[in-house]
Amino acid sequence: MFNKSTLSLLSLIICSHAFASSLEPYSKIEINNKNTLYTINDANIDLAASLFQNVPQSITDSLLKAHSGDSEPSFRTPINTFLIAKDGQNYLIDAGGGECLGQDGNKTRKVLEQLNIAPNKINGVLLTHAHTDHICGLATYNKEKDKWEPSYPNATLFINELEYQHWVVQENDKQVKAILNAYSNLGTDKIVKFKAGDKLVDTFEVFDAKGHTVGHSAFLWQPEDQEAWIFFGDIIHNTDNQFANPEITISFDSNPTDAIKSRNYFLEQAFINKWNIAGAHINSPGIGKVDFSDKTYKWLPHK
Ligand SMILES: [Zn+2]
Image (cartoon, rainbow, N blue to C red; front, top):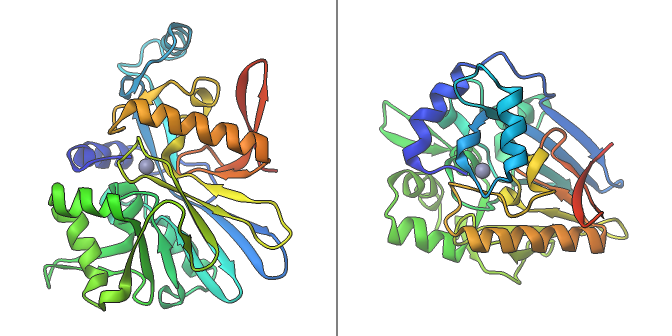
């Protein structure tokens, strides 16, 4: 969701709410005897209402009313990661904000510890995109050695080739490069670049979800004879308002027009195909289904 210019501001916001979270750190769904899905609340942040664009006046009015007296209304927003344990293999969808987002975050690694899943037991990390709140948990900065060290030394990283090209080649982003290098230094095969239509580890089908970033991607997972799950990263940043108003964008979207198209596409497909949805910034539990009535999409939280 974020670029580097917003990072220091976010750290301040998070620290001020270090003890405010009431969300459970994770939930567990036994899909069948071979597949388990964990949703992990990596961190929580406050997103200022002013970051959102195309907001209907009625929403702005009710926000101002509810927050009268506050200098700026904001939305408490989770950062979620997902762990899929299948056939003895462990795959993460995104890695969370790690230490980049302050002491209140970085819960993905803590939850893995609680689950007795050692860092070297993570086989792969699938990245929806390369913003800080999704990739910083991949590595830890070692001050003494002045380098980033991988959080999951046996993991293969999967990243959209367009996303890689944008951040590493065009933007020459130091942080993204350092984090990815922590893995490529371990072997040239540690980073796999994918494109829409690919099937990763014979399991996850890649969908183009561009708009939030140029290579923003979603992953469809259909365990044998079970309902499908779509992990769609930052398609939704605001649970209360963006299902009903998919035209609302956030200033972090690199191409707002494409972001709206992608949001409409995934909400429609999730409704038609009865996919379960899993979002990086959907309110607890971060998963559910999409309903459509009165010409409006609605989120049905997983129970
Ligand atoms: Zn994000």
